Length: 224
Picture 1 (cartoon, one colour):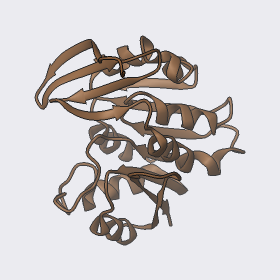
Picture 2 (cartoon, helix red, strand yellow):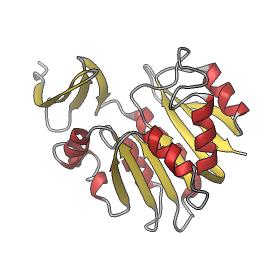
Picture 3 (cartoon, one colour):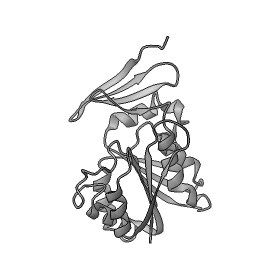
Picture 4 (cartoon, one colour):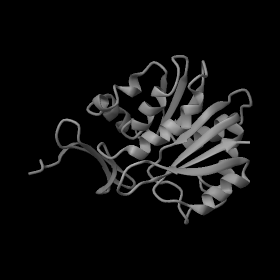
């Protein structure tokens, strides 16, 4: 018989209660408004997201990577495992309690990825951070990785969506170094988003994680 879930922590947000639940030593859920956002036993797409975003940087002595969204830090762990000791990884996370969870009960899942000396955690909206960084021509990133709980979808505002609209894509393009990579997690494929990437100075394609069952999509876009 399966063990019952135990709620370890709960905080109120505008979208409902954000909860961390545990069942067994390594079985965790993060839920929002009662809906499951992340499951520690089903994180193939999050791991692939980090791997695809950084695998071309394995031989780079000092790459710069920006990650939007922390979650359970599974994507961050995959990013760190793909990079050299000289890398700098900046992680933008909106909710401080998620950082607390990744430093506390979730730390064992990722080898305490958030405490890696290469990592800088910044509390705030990654869209606002990208907009600010894109204005500074001296600061460029080799990869930008979006691991956000709402991926691109057909109802995304094609111009104004802060992450997936045409204007947001243009800001990421300016932020990336020549040949830099943008990878984006999505629950489902969105043809319009891929079209916007290709029209916005990227060469884009999609990947899905291996294995059976439902598989999320990863948008992979290289700056051209």
